[in-house]
Length: 130
Length: 272
Image (cartoon, rainbow over all chains, first blue to last red; front, side, top):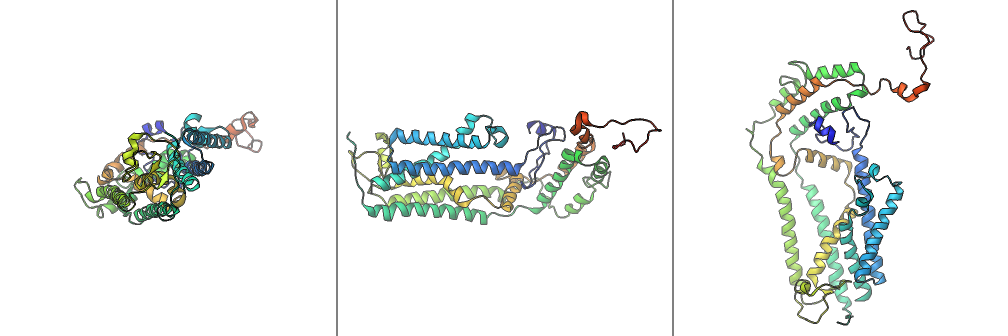
């Protein structure tokens, strides 16, 4: 897509993502579907967010504290990423915008971490403080 | 310091912790839906011209999928001198010339202010909520975070509670507000869900027209049409379809028995 931008500055002026557009100038063979790419990214993010919330609830109910809670979250986040990679048959580049497995496993960790902390705090307080 | 186990009143849970969480979820949803409803429509004229230019750029990029004759005729329709659709005297620009008001190149301040107003309303709302929560729910502990914080966080997280020996893991209402504010970002996306295809399309189109100060600049349609016309004139036809059956079959592709004028056309399936 970078080569294409150099060849044609008017390419991809911006249009409805519903049309599957070719990102080449007719020279290459790669076909890039914006709609499916967006949907893949959304599904990956949603799966991670759901698991972050669930991990927070579990660790709060189990009474995990301090470092154990953070290790539990990190292990769970990486585990979810690994499960998604198995679903993608370890071909991360074809299904997502990430170029390496490490960047894929560690993506969205901040957003999911904040959600994890919220539900971890909430359920820990509900179970052990009230 | 020995671990402290303080049990809080269930009334705090029923009347403060859970209602605060609910209030923040509802205000976040309200803000999201309000911004969607109040999004002002972008000028239609620029949109029509830009989508027209997309058609010509698509012809250049994917013209190999149509026949040479069709490509040539489409190219001629767009680039023909004086009458082509991309020409200055052509039907597209001449019909829009009466509608497009000459702005003299001045940026439109109204569109530039939209982005700023959105950010300002978010900040104002946050400040109001923060002050209201610290005013109405001060003086008592709300929740206990399941990890130890350093003593430096004490004045911030235990605002309104003057207990030097209290563990820093017990926090006040303001801390709970921040925790909820940052933690609900991912949750909002799950609640609101994916935008409808029409909304996604409008976002993409608005993004193409620019946002904030970028959107304030007027779209120079004559210059864009002229450059697009020049690029289409020099574009060459490269077929993607021709030879595809030979590429697919490889060695299995049947070769013609005889060549030349005396060849029997019935023997060759593909007329080679």
